[in-house]
Image 1 (cartoon, rainbow, N blue to C red):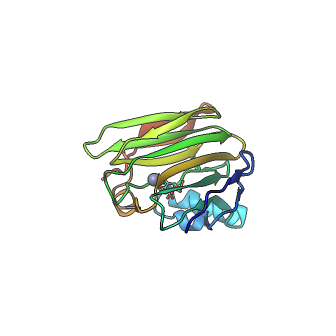
Image 2: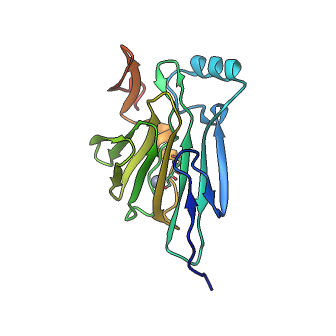
Length: 187
Ligand code: F6R
Ligand code: ZN
């Protein structure tokens, strides 16, 4: 039987205690997601293939609700800010919430019929991700971006659509500021 418990989440480091799982993605794991492959190669060579982000889970298969943290490093690949792969949920009726704890970023969302929205990520903002919207988080700041996510345990991830086609918009640095621009490679 699952028992109630208080899970301690550190909003600065993203540590979750207790947690059930974790994984990390290095820049080399994100090949195919950034626009500029040569810039990715340079960033990998210069940084020693640094960790781009880490995900820590509190998840029990016997419960419908899971949560955890995503900890995103600052940085850029070319002029594109560090980002997650981005996905739709396999169970298309499942939404999600992202509650930012520290840092600053943008949540980029895209509906199946091509509507694009962003939600600012900063402490105090809990972003609502409606069902069947692709979502990718982007660290546009100088520090770690840490957020807590809540979603259905079995929502699942569809990465293929985003990897194959890309998202319609990119978040790049222009004049020292984040800007949303058309993705020239969008298929
Ligand atoms: C789960 C969710 C987050 C992301 C995490 C990494 O549904 O949206 O936990 O999985 O922020 O992003 P991806 O999975 O897109 O690499
Ligand atoms: Zn999700």
